[in-house]
Length: 160
Image 1 (cartoon, rainbow, N blue to C red):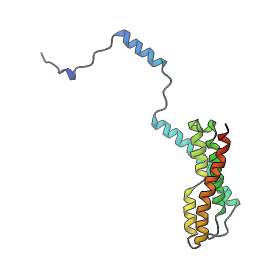
Image 2: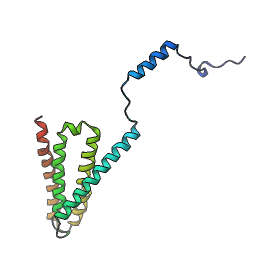
Image 3: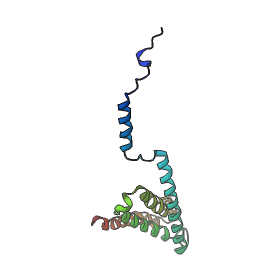
Image 4: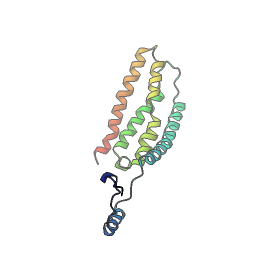
């Protein structure tokens, strides 16, 4: 007769009553959340759709407010980023959006993330390198006014 080491033995089956009780407990548990990969895919698609909308809105504003040359103040990007900061402040105070993951990913990450852009600030600042006063004014104004706009946008949410 061959003896099996205790750690290699198969675990004993639970008695029938315990198995049935375990099955009933599983049925009472709340429905499981999506697995992380499925959540990433779902939220990624939702954010991508929102980003497409935000980017198209940004492009439209850039066509409406054209900058005469690469060395003049980039008003369209400035207005887009300040408006986006204001909207993010408003949205941050909205529990209907912030407490719902799908809505938050669509509106904040997607629409407003696609609408505002840091890369445009970086490129336009480099284009303004020959005019340091305008370059510094643009960077400081964008961040200062953007932060102020986000604060102003968040004020209605503070009253709730």
